[in-house]
Image (cartoon, rainbow, N blue to C red; front, side, top):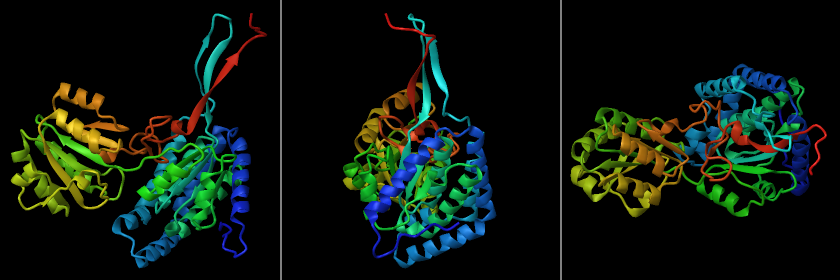
Amino acid sequence: MPLTTATSASFDMARYMEDVGAAARSSSRLLACATTAQKNTCLRSLGEALLRYKNEIIAANEMDCAGAQASGYDSGLLDRLQLSPQRIEALGAGILEMIELPDPVGVIEHLAPQPSGIRVGRMRVPLGVIAMIYEARPGVTIDAAALCIKSGNALILRGGSEAIHTNRALAGYIQTSLEEAALPRQSVQLVATTDRAAVGHLLAMKRWVDVIIPRGGKTLIQRVDEEAQVPVIRHFDGICHVYVEASADTNSAVDVCVNAKTQRLSTCNTAETLLVDQAIAAHFLPEVARRLQQAGVSLRGCPQTRAILPNIDAATEEDWRTEYLAAILSVRVVKDLDEAIAHIAEYGSGHTDTICSSDYHTIERFVREVDSSSVMVNASTRFADGFEYGLGAEIGISTNRLHVRGPVGLEGLTCQKYVVYGDGHIRQ
């Protein structure tokens, strides 16, 4: 079902965005009261629509990809933009998994009697209206919509202009699925204009929007973080590290390093820096370098690394702070665990970091002391994902200290309110 496109020369952006916000607020009140059965019916319809209309979705996506290529976008953006049949099927699988997850809305936790006789607990409730601002990731349209529907939140989607044809197609199927479940069609709205001024309006819509979640490049995240007048759930970079400690099983560690870097280059949970303990660097680095270079990865190393791998480029100070999203990996030899943790604290982005080790005490220190939203042991950073964490999907990766941290799934899209049960109790 096509959406209305806001392209008229006389188009009133302020009025249009106010109408979108008001409709979202009105829909949020109804969606918050929807039954689990209604929400699951909607999700099932959406999952079926993705498969039924897969060819139509791919056709729309091919238009976007062709436009992006003609505009000279880089390979990382093109990879994030493309929806292959396999990716569409994966989106559908995430929706089906979400249907099976418990509905967090209305759950009362820790209900307990107090000395006065009242019973006090905390109930999970939706956040309200969520605005999603994102670039070149049409899969986010589906993941965000499914998560918000299941968690009872209304959603305003403002995708990038490079994905407009795909997003319009997907939003149409989402709204049809809402109607089939007798839920408000405007529970999920795609901003119908690609004018960047729409973002400015969203950032200032305190009356209508409760939370903003940006997903995209550093420029977008910084703008949202600086200008938003409502709370933001965000992360700036995915500068993820793999630290190979002296006691690591080297064969396993090589596999983890290669997978963390090469399984998919353009994602925020892809490794950008490899740290190797000096005690094993001489025999570990040549093998991991061989595997990475076979996969097309260019290495940049510190002086100690280049003493072992003389044919690689020198790493600069800026390399340690760079999220490449490309076939480039920075490599540093570190003296010990303390130096590895210090490097991550200085240059990491608080996203995902992993250690390869077989020493219990070393592992425990790394897990306790590395301050990231996901800390892993003997596993690829690519597992930092809502689907892999059993969340069904994710609306983003949060590095905020408040409210959520890590993949934002159903529970992350709710908050709690106190509920008190009495029987005519009055306070003395």
